[in-house]
Length: 233
Ligand SMILES: [Zn+2]
Ligand SMILES: [Zn+2]
Image (cartoon, rainbow, N blue to C red; front, side, top):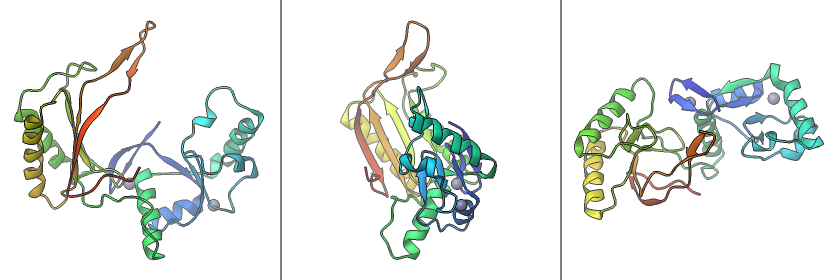
């Protein structure tokens, strides 16, 4: 998965490949009905019949592994379209879908976090400041994934998710409440004050015999949304 740098959101993981007409609509923050096939977004005119069986797929997972003839055809269609496609930020795309819905008087298709600190140039130093304060707030266990880092992380938000303070191994309610109060107080002084504090019981780092490793399922024990509500599932 790639990453893209955009002015409103800073560095964002993931991207969308879009036809020039969808690109224009994203830029105008008014993205109307369109076709989504994994990370590709196309208007009616640019839609290829070979992609139709996968219209509405939210991820590109259908493209990986052994392909059926239909998947093979979709992949070829993508290669034919590729020279015409632009790359856009997924968060700007979400904002443009919301922009269209609001203009049309429809409910928001996305829960929007419009007042959260992001990774953009303006917000990043404030996110860094919070990271340093949280780091110093209490002793943290080091991450088993990368012991150079603590098991508590602070990440800037974007349009579809708020700033997050996420930590492992803090299981007592009183200790959790203290951290929540600390973050709440910090955000109360910010113009962009939406955030979430998330507690997970323990890291689950699975190392395979061949040396490859990945995170396994980890249990969220508590989430506290500050100045916003949880995203719709
Ligand atoms: Zn188009
Ligand atoms: Zn963006």
